[in-house]
Image (cartoon, rainbow, N blue to C red):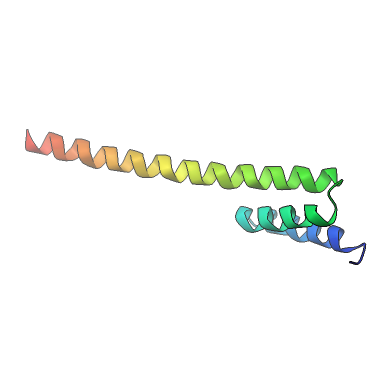
Amino acid sequence: LAPSWPKASFRLASCLAALGEWSAAAQVAVHALGLAPDSQELAALAQEAQGRVLGVELGSRFQRKTLADDVATSLTNHRK
């Protein structure tokens, strides 16, 4: 492997993160950690990206639950 590959992967993951593509950024950063396991920058980027992905997933689940609750409440109030 070329020594510049982890650096290029870090740049790619950083660009993806800047574009808001957190899932892709997390995948690239995690795979790049396999090339450079001692890289603190890659580890931090991977952790941040994974956290953002989980936050987005948890947020969308919460929104779906809230919407479902609103619909149920609306139906209950309509029936009264």
